[in-house]
Image 1: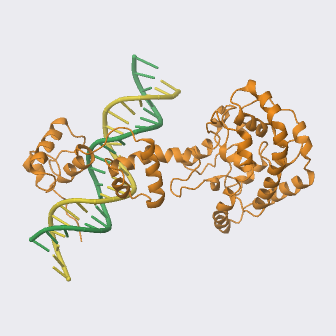
Image 2: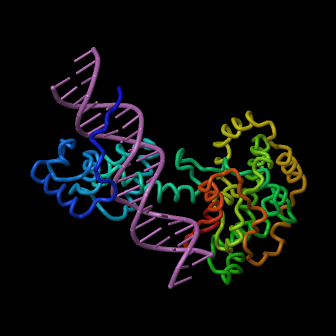
Length: 335
DNA sequence: AAAGTCTGCAACCGCTTTCTT
DNA sequence: CAAGAAAGCGGTTGCAGACTT
């Protein structure tokens, strides 16, 4: 069934409402109540479409509308509801008194969605977005090479060690103290890390990865500005124990991608894993001098050129999360 | 200081669903 | 039951103000 216009649009005003128009609409509704939108504009003396009047009332003039910034609780509620309902804005709004669907939709698109992306979470699926990472090129890169990770000369490469330090100490003059206090437990826990990394490497070796041709660039050059106190939560997860569940959860997606793309590369990962398991010498890890904090090298972090801006932001943000003052590295890796 | 770019949000568009006659 | 009107809904657009160069 075709739908005719709700009113004759010729000569009707569009665009932002003026105070005078708002007043007319308010006064009319106060007397006659909302509804009957087709005849309302004429009766209220408004040169507006009835639909426009209804929207103005429901989204702005209604007295029960709560204005101002969304609270943390509201934001969390929106995220939770969205993870269940998706873009059912009216259903979400029905559970947030005083908020309109339009307002929630706008807030989602301008704030929450970006925040989730910044945290490496897909705003549609609400799951981590490691699927976007080109692990192959990452692990072959200078700093995030699996061989380096597991090999004594380089593992716990300076940046990883520095990350550990930074997690426990936000200022550089505390680093030595941290190392003195934490190295013994780290010696034990790093053994556990090794097992987990080895296990993760096994997972990786059976996980198809996007080819470098498809992901020629990974992280944007502006990561060169990343300072020593900004580290990658997800990257760290890849190096530390008990966070490797992220990879298995993405495996089906990788497999689906692999089935569509014959150029997936696994050999590099397999080689890295084989080399690492042969060459590993744990003691030398701790004998490797701590490097002075330096910005993460942008050469290892490139963004897939085919990704969207938001996705690019996701990649970049993977390396940017605030480290709480109270964060304890030991607790984290023992967790 | 000016021009260009970005951001947030109100409002619109067009489709679907529900209601009324 | 069918047709048309009204309401609901989600995606998109346009613009004002903020920010950057």
